[in-house]
Image (cartoon, rainbow, N blue to C red; front, side, top):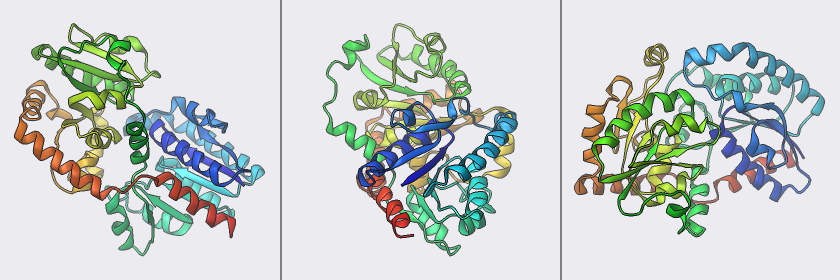
Length: 372
C-alpha cells in the first residue's frame, strides 16, 4: 500500500513515526511519503515538505508563515494526485490538515485523521468538516470520544500514544551512567526543567526559572534541551547548580524529584513518570489576548484536562512570575501535596489506556483500506 502522511511539528511527527513503524510490520509492501522531518526520514519516508521551519505557536507567529504554507499546500495537492496513495493520514496540525481533508476527500482519497483538533476548546465549526470529510478520526484523549458522540460522530479511542514511548523506555535499562555522561553531580536531589521545544518558549521561561534556581542551591536543576535549538541559548542559564541534557528527557524524569514544565505533552509525560510538577504557559502578549477570546477551557495542562479537575498547579501568562513560581515550587516539595498529586496521576493512568496504542491504530487503518 502507498501512504501519504502530513504532520506539521515535532510532537505530531513522533506520533507519525510510531504509527509508520507499526504499519510497516502489518504491511510489508508499504511505501511512505509526506510532510515531516528527520524522524520520519529515519524511517525511510520520502519527505515532500520539511517541517523544520514550521515550529510555530501563537496567532501572530502563524500569520507570518501563511504564504509559505499555502504554496506548500497547493504543491502537495498536485503531488498527491499524481502519487495516488491508498491512504492519507493527517496527524494533528489542524489549521492546514483540515483543508487537506476537505480537498482530498472530495477527490476520492481515503482520509484518516490522527490526533483530533481541539474542537472541544475552540472553533467547533471544524466538527462539520471532520464529520463530512474524514473517513476515520483517531482521538488520543479519553473525553474526546464522548464529546464527538454528541455530534453524531463515532471516533476511535485506543489510548494516548505517549504510553507506548514511556513504557518502552521503562522496559529498557535505565542508564546508570546518566549523571556521569552529562557531568551532573549526584550529591543533591534533581529538579527537572522542561521549558518547551520552541525558541520563544525557552527564551521567555528560562530567565524566570533561573532566578528560582539561584534561591535553591540545595537542589540540582537540570534543563531538558533539544538539539534543534542553538545550544548557546541554553548555556546562558547554567550555573553551579543548573545543568543541561539534550534529548534525554525521559532519563531526566526518571531521576527527578519534581519538575517545572511548559504546558503540552510534556505535562502528561511528567505525570506518567510520577513526578510532581508546576505547569507554566506563556505566549506573545498579542497572541495570548486573542487566544483568551477564542479558547474556552478550564485548564491548560493535559493532566488537569483529562482529570477535569486541578491536580497540578498552572501558572498562565502574567501569573508565571518568580513569586508565584516559588510559591508553587515549595508546594510540590511538601510531602502531603506530593502524595495527592501522585494519587491524581494514578487516576490519570487508568483513564488513558494501555500499551499498544500505535499498533492498534495501525491495524484499524490497514483493515479500512485493505477491504475498501
